[in-house]
Length: 402
Image 1 (tube, rainbow, N blue to C red):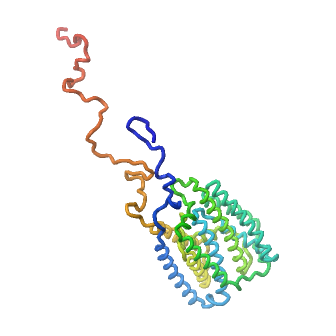
Image 2: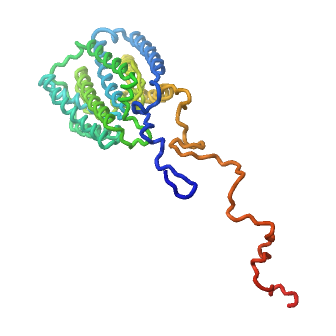
Image 3: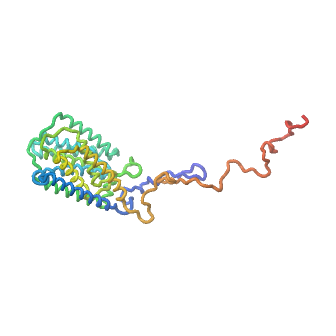
């Protein structure tokens, strides 16, 4: 505490920004666990929508949901799902990786160019580069403590520069038929997505993963544990984006176009938010990613079947718009229930109280106050010019004989 004059005390630190108020840290957060009910309700709605779209797709073309075309659709779901998992994992740590789209396109181009050497020989160097790039991105985010979206956008620009060195589409070299294992790939993706959601629903895990989420000043460092978790998530998301690009190239029917891939980033972020992952980090659902990715893949397949293929920008923008509304629902109804005597949310500034610890009172009637000048006594004349203390001699100017 500091004193600048008698009777007035000013705090030297703000209680609202103290270490004990870190809502994202284990032991210093909101009491109780995050509520999952809002996620389950939204995932039920996603399931209903997915079933309806599958029925529409089957009615439009029954061959689209069986045989070879079903295998192609399942591989597309897995490729999109890996991109959504990459974004969702980084979103959970509050450091979204926006470079996943360009990384996927770069991986597809690499497989197309080097695929004739064999899948293993082509993948090992690419995986090494992806891990190294993810580490550089993670160091920029955690050591410099800069926003993940800004650092990953710079990384995306660097990858786009590498992509634009190709002036023409590249045909895939070698035979890489991933459709033979389409059902296995889909089962593996579904298991990873659901088990990951269940694991992240544990209170301790959820808070550990979300430690990088800002509390108070967003530029404030969140500690070594938060940095390690976020760095691991960024490296893993880069590797998942690489694997998604490999599947896109192997499942394609034509050459790989050297496009920037930012539309795939928008689509991936939209699917992650649509599945219930919060844009602020930490909170997310269980089945949401699997259902959202499947729904988007079926929408794209249905539009193509009806002869009106949709642009990825269009689908991504729509998914983002709905996903942002889902984020608001998740943050509103997914936070822990307040305990007895605890406020549901901190009181916002501007209504007589500032949540940082400073307290302002409303102006009101004051019965006692200290005047700046002394109160005149009854002995003092009304006119100060007639007061006796103004004159020490005879009154010359008002002499009547003059």
